[in-house]
Every structure is written in structure tokens, then in C-alpha cells.
Length: 320
Image 1 (cartoon, rainbow, N blue to C red):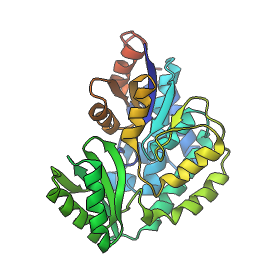
Image 2: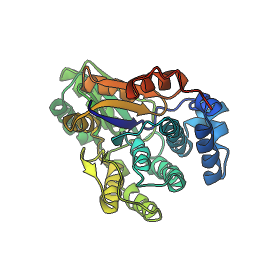
Image 3: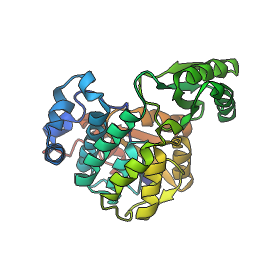
Image 4: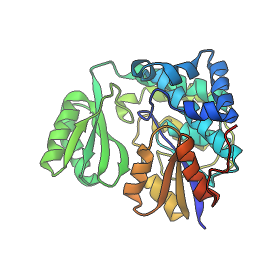
């Protein structure tokens, strides 16, 4: 049997009610949400469980909400004896991965990602930037489209998600021109995403020193299990390397496809998406056809994960 990697979702995976079923059925999940409320001094759990999409999609709410939900799911998995051999996360999800590896504490990570969300939101004024998904075009041609469109402003690859799925980010005139050029170069689709911040491009370069100051206020530790960083698609172990990866991640592309391929090459053959949604599950399937991957976000999906990780039905584990 190979090794298990836990992977954690980023911004965009949120939805109202995420994690609520686990909180209703598992004391470990309830404890995580209660701690999140205490740490942030606000009823984050009520926003997650009962608010509306508009409130939840505010970046400074979204980021701690997703991390808290992911770590609640992790707490339940751990209570049932399921530990990962490695961890990784897409963008924001990298913070959840680092908590999993004991490099960051739960108490420190929530205020940190809340501040990260504010800094990123403030970096690009509304109506200036955006992001778009380019589907069915290889990296070289996406780079060409961005390079040619950059005469109109900043536009750069932001996420290498999976083969044939690359997200670009930048200033709107350049972004829209890059989409046109990508279609001319053979892209199946070029779709603007419903975001107002140009994540993971040089427009956010100014956030880096501010985020570095916030990270310096936390107590980073060496990882206890391997963690693959977005910016390098390689392992980070020491506090200085972790900080560097988190800071540079803000304005550089997320190498998610490379991250998944790195883990597979090193013998990780089972992937569990821990947290809301199943976007990463889909990306892993596109990148590694045939590999076992499943999300764990509610009682039903948790039972399926347990049946594989423990070789049992999963139904034997009573909620508590």
C-alpha cells in the first residue's frame, strides 16, 4: 500500500452550511468551530452555518471560514485514527496543510489568514483586476497570450491547476485581451471568474512585506510531516523556508498540477480533499487519471474515505 496525502482547498470552495453536519455529529468538529469563534472574537461558526453567500464571500471572512472548516474535518478524521503521510493545499489551503503538519498553530493561523484576506482585498481596487480560466491550452501558449496582451497592462498565469486548465490574473484590459488571444491560439474556452482580486500575480507584490510582518508575529515550527509548497512544488521543512513560501505565494503562480505530480512521484497514491467542496478532487483526477482521490466534508463522504483508509465500512464509526 502506498502513502496518503491530505489536500486542502482554497478560496472559492466556500458555501453556506459547510461543516455543519460534521459539527452536529462530532464533538471534535464542534470544538474546532467553538475555538474559531473564541480566537477571532466573533461568531464565525454562525456565519459559516447560517449566513448568506454575500457575507461569506467577503475575503476576510472567507479565508478563516474555509480554514476553520477544513481543520474541523481534519479533527474528525484524526479522531477516527486517520493520519496523513503528507499534506498540501491550494493557495489558502497551504495554511491548513501547515497546521496539519504542526508548523502553525490553530490559534495563530486564523488571525493570520483573516489579515491575509484583508491585505489581498485592499491591494487591488474594485474594477481594476480580475481572473480568467483558460481551458484546453498548454502552458507555452498561455504564456504567449499573456506576453502579447501585457502591452495593455499586467496579465500573468496565476494557477497551473491541471493539464489544460490554467488561470490567469491581472488588470482587466490586459486580461480580456489575453482571453481573446488564448482562443485564437486554440483554447476551448476562456472564462472570466467572479472575483474582484487578481490573486497570485504581480499586482499583489505590495502585499508581501505586509504579510511577512504578520507571519513574523506567529510562531512557525518545523513540519512534522512533509508539506509541498505552492510556489516551488517542492517540500518545505524549516520555518524560514515556510515563511518564504507563504510570502512569495501571494504574487506568484500556484503550481498545483506540479504539486500533485510531485506527491505521486514520491509514492503518494491516495489523496483526501479535507474541507469544503470537491474542486481539488476534480483537479487531481485530471492530473492523475486512475489515482484514488475523495473529498471528506460531511458524514457521507467521510464514510467513503474511512472505507478505503481503514479497509472497513466506515458505518461502524458512530458519530459522537
